[in-house]
Image (cartoon, rainbow, N blue to C red):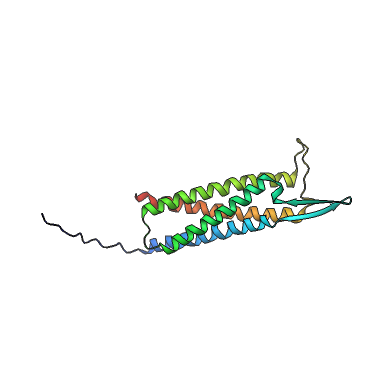
Amino acid sequence: MEIKEANVRAKAPNKTDKLLLATQICLRIAATATAMAAAWVIFTANQTVEVLGMSFDARYSYSPAFKFFAYANAIAFGFSLMSLFFMFFARHALTATIYFFFFLHDLMMMSLVLSGLASGTAIGIVARDGNGHTGWLKICDRFEKFCNKVTVSLSLSYVAVVCLLVLTVMSAGKSRQI
């Protein structure tokens, strides 16, 4: 029996693969930066106002929905940063299987940020408009600085979700070759 060595040469990346990799790295940087910025803004959002001689505070930690939103963005920042490093340092060894794991990662991070965003947006709307049926008063007319920071944080998180959605679709497309 003769043993023949296969003369397998690694396929050189074409221009489309390089463009796809550069786009993924840019989108991962954008998702990481916006998730970090959203978490930072919501963590630092606080305001104290005085009404009729009494002091009232508004902080993200007073609402479980805002806490979930803040922690979801912080977790997404950490995991997106790890995937960015992995993508950057392992860019020459990316296979369809690795892209499948990126797909799962991007899908989970997008779902986490989207669920935190939904809870933060719901409470933000109640804070802005109130709810007459339940007797909840709007607070954004008194806590303008706090509400503006929450709005900025929610907007940044929407950008992160869009970046993660595009990354999920791109990773799914590259992992089809399994």
